[in-house]
Length: 215
Image 1 (cartoon, helix red, strand yellow):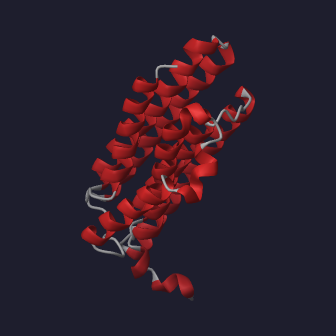
Image 2: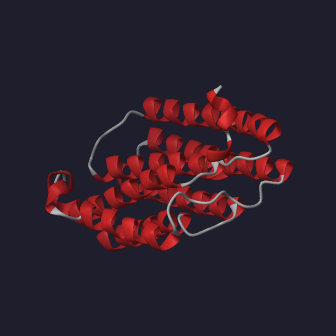
């Protein structure tokens, strides 16, 4: 494996998660997610070139279709149809969010998670970087008030898990991966309908404004 290539791709991957905390437009967040998913597809394709497993190529094509094309398309249509141009604010301010992101990144590289990073000693730095992206994606879900931003955070978290499993050597059958992608596609389809109905009813996707849901 070309570690330099993987380090470069994962650095870009982490930057997409980082910038998801900075963008204020749902469209920009969707573009970042699409690019992030493309990076995952590239990683899987590189692994396919090393194994020449035809089933792996099938997963790569399916992931390209579902995560890079269909998922962003669904979200863009939702944004355009309901005029959801700007995302909701965050629970914490941007400077504090960046401090937390830095802390999570340091934590992922610390001795606390060294055992996870050393699952495959040769990929320790790669695993630590992927773990950082996982933590930061999880924080995005917790910190954002907008439903679309939270959905993108969940999808980013899933990308991080896939990437971590890839470098940790956790083998998954092509059937299992295809099933997961199918679940993601159905989940996104249902989520877009659900979010559209919420917006029509409440006039906002800011979760803090949906007090009537408690009744």
